[in-house]
Length: 318
Image (cartoon, rainbow, N blue to C red):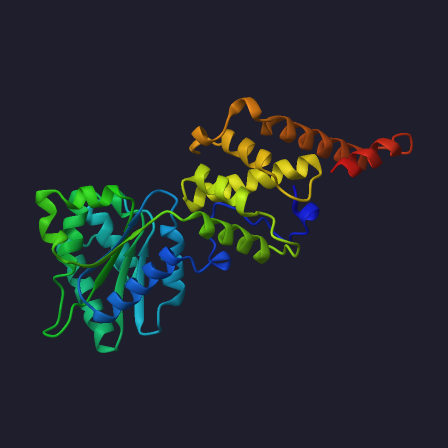
């Protein structure tokens, strides 16, 4: 890959949410501030929504990593669960040792007892659910009933929902109006502006070990921001492909042509901003890199005395 070419220790634009690359972008910081303030109140539901790829899971992980010690957290990353499965998942995350033969009423009682015990020990219990738009209606109703568990002065459980915009559509249904009324705080993650995209990309490169001048200048940043529609996940994809194209050419700086080719090669990018007639494509670059790496591996396991000049030439190209 292009790590050595750009002096990097690790890939800067992976799709896995990594809090080590967290950058204080305005929407992400505001979301965390809303969450922290809401959790301090100890009441009701908290909701964070956003378009696919805007950083909900990253904010979720950042929140989990930074919860103060008085919080006991249960985390459900894949919530396509029936009400019964949801109760079992909550019980497991709270460390409740239960027998398989328990019925749902007994399981709910054990959860209630555990929440009371944690409250008496000074803990605030928060249930964090990622991809909450996947919860069936019956499970959303089960969540609402969970928040009925309380003492005379406070709720025993808070629920934080992270979900795509479809979650808002779901909550607008009449049959979920009781849950909707219990959402005390909410935040919607917006797409990034072009200057935020530029700062974001160069920050990730710095964290990955890059030490040169800014790789993405204003022109390239504006183009990638438009191509990605300000969505961080798409920014990562386009930035990665742009670096790959620059590496394939042996260039130390990315250009508008590299950015346009990356946009044209990406399924969900905004291709209307580029002209296909002016583009070279990513595929020949990938083929070249693959062939070159194959040759290098092959030469490693064979006699290369007669092919040294080819090895030197390929190494020079890369």
